[in-house]
Image (tube, rainbow, N blue to C red; front, side):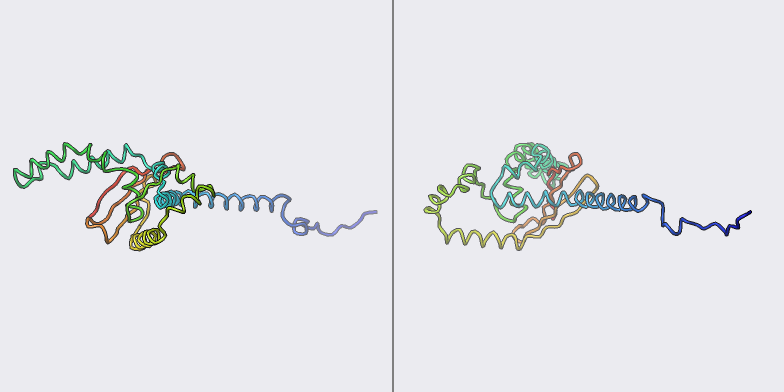
Length: 219
């Protein structure tokens, strides 16, 4: 005989979505999270470089500070600014013309003498750098040499210097931000500086590296 069959049931509703769909959603969610974390890390990378440079300046480690500076590019930029500021065409007297010719002609030598990791340390911390040679920094890691060096320290002078350093950084104003995808600037201003604000300009090198390559003074 014939068997009567009822209407066919939709088994998809009973068993849920197709196998593998849930795992694909989790995979895409994880991938999106990783990409977002990488984007945030890349965005914050120049901020981290500035933080590392300030730490090196505080410790007097000019070698570590210089690793983040393109000194030839920075000196060339400062020399160019000196020449532009001392164009003879902007002179108001014959004496001014002579002075501008002299200063403009010495721009390269002046930039070589002026631009250094110590200058960058001053801009980033608000106080003159006190370079500490690596041999002394390495020696302080040894308990024996540290004990010997402690005999010649002046605690009162060190406390006064530390307080002056804290005050300099407390009054220093730093504003950071992107000028473009490949340029990042730091505006530093201190009440101790008579010529306004210094602007440090970093350029991207590849995907991860940033180097200081320009310095401007804004009044």
